[in-house]
Image (cartoon, rainbow, N blue to C red; front, side, top):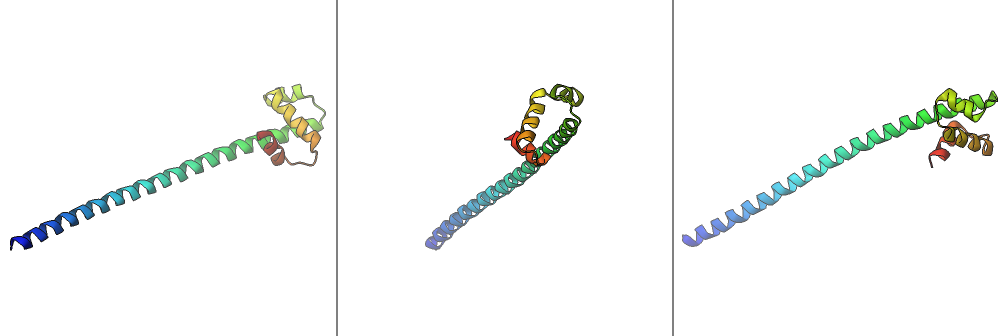
Length: 112
């Protein structure tokens, strides 16, 4: 009978250890899933922010090109749009090199 008790106790300890390991694995899985969700959310937020920044830059580029067609100088356009002359100059140069480019293409060149 004591041999049976020993076997049962060993079985019980082994079962308890396996259950503890499964619980640890479940917690790790939960942490990983939480990390994935947080990463996805952060990625979405960053993507939205970049998209908004790009949209704002494209709007400025369109305004610069419009004022260029009117024959305004870089300094005048910078003052009108309340932008740095360096940015306006970059747009000017890019447009002179690639007159057929869209505002989006110019934005890509300027940001890189």
